[in-house]
Amino acid sequence: MPTPSDVDIWPLLGVRIQVSDVELAPIDDRTALDLGRLAAGGIHGNFLPFSTPWTRGTETEVARNVYRYHSRLRHELSPERWSLEFAARLDHTLIGVQSLTAEQYGTTRSAESGSWLGQAWQGKGIGTLNRIAILTLAFEGLGAHEVTTSAWADNQASNAVTRKLGYEPNGEERLDREGRVTVQKRFRLSREMWERRGADLRPHVDLQGVEALRRWLSID
Ligand SMILES: CC(C)(COP(=O)(O)OP(=O)(O)OC[C@H]1O[C@@H](n2cnc3c(N)ncnc32)[C@H](O)[C@@H]1OP(=O)(O)O)[C@@H](O)C(=O)NCCC(=O)NCCS
Image 1 (cartoon, rainbow, N blue to C red):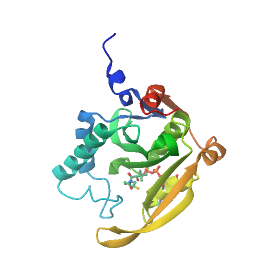
Image 2: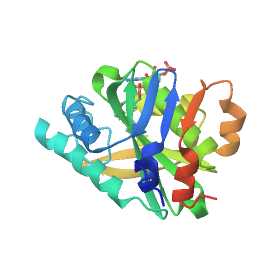
Image 3: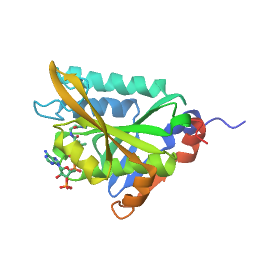
């Protein structure tokens, strides 16, 4: 038996998604620390875009939250419950995170995306590219039937990306955000909607390492 490679041991390590000059690659220990520093440098103003306040606190606390979060998700990955967390790089510079999360995906074929960019990289069209990249992984690479997303009603950038890519509304919830009731909007994009609306909207996306990932996650 040959000695197993890194990708044999942990097939997520072989996955790369390239769209335009943005690359998504799995988050290793070194990258989780660097992402922590990026997040500590600022993701948003006073308005909290996330469901939990992990960006509140000192720079060290924010960086530690990022490191702990990605380390935990990396090790908890299983076919029943996974969160594929990717670091986004623009021309090799680390700029943010794009994720795809699912439970019992083998049965549901439904996954949820999430993302953030360092403040300096926002508003330049990169969030849209990252979302197209992760949707391509889901629909073309992993055979998703639908991909969902959600954002606070006042998260204009996130909701603009969602609207632009043709999702449909999928309900809303009144939730606590730092002590105030706030509406969170949910959206879904079905495979049919992706295929019908997507082709003329999206740039070419190159997927690598997806077959091994599918086998590992028991996706037929
Ligand atoms: C949400 C996020 C990933 C979007 O990425 P982005 O690169 O900033 O978005 P893009 O530049 O691709 O913009 C997409 C659309 O949003 C619009 N948009 C961006 N910021 C906006 C704002 N503040 N108000 C209104 N529209 C806005 C853009 O005009 C663009 O639409 P257009 O192409 O029709 O002009 C990024 O802004 C971010 O990381 N925000 C902070 C963290 C966050 O909110 N994460 C998501 C949690 S649900």
